[in-house]
Length: 289
Image 1 (cartoon, one colour):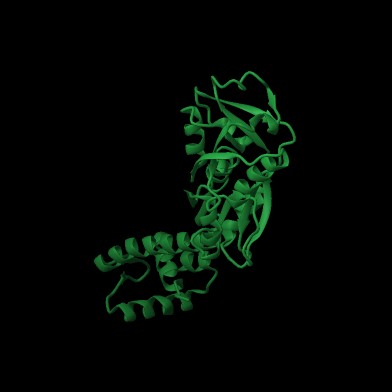
Image 2 (image 1 turned 120 degrees about the vertical axis):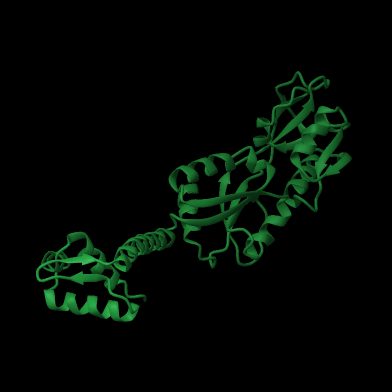
């Protein structure tokens, strides 16, 4: 570690203007202080003070060195503080991925609370399709992610953060829109808009399974990647959709949401790799918990 004591000794001497007072402030005797100053001048190859019988004055080199030494000591103090803050997870960077469903559930609240609690952390939020996020967490491209619940790759840990259920998204002028609750069987002859199985396999499977439990396979008119696209297509009247209830917050004038009787759960999970040692992640997990 860099020895900054000579700088501190010199700054204290310059500020007190007296060897005895400087030594007392530094909890030293005067001879060691004098030796330290002489060693510092020898190392620099310049005189920092002009000594008199009872007093001394800073040379031009001493005045310049005093200003620079103060700045260096302040920087070292700041660096030490930054290192301690980083070790506590109060400084650094954190990258959190999320799906569109999380954008309408917990992601905004987490981001707001974390920024308020840890303003020294550079928080990056990255939206992606669900099936990409687990791989990005495993690869270390993300510190954590909020995804639709699914079977996770080895090496990841999950915590359920949203307990959601499917609901029905309908065009506002649809014949079923007047009902407040719908049974799956009432959707038998309707065209569906679905999230593709390659993007959200658990969600896709849940929709197919709940329809089959009512004795039919859905007529899938479109398969898309994003839940927002699903809702937009519903608003255009091309079909209806079964979506996580958190998507109700996406309010479009041409779309209504209705409860589904016996709706299956579609939970959202916070996932992370326990082997990933980012102190900022520990703070985020505490907040999310």
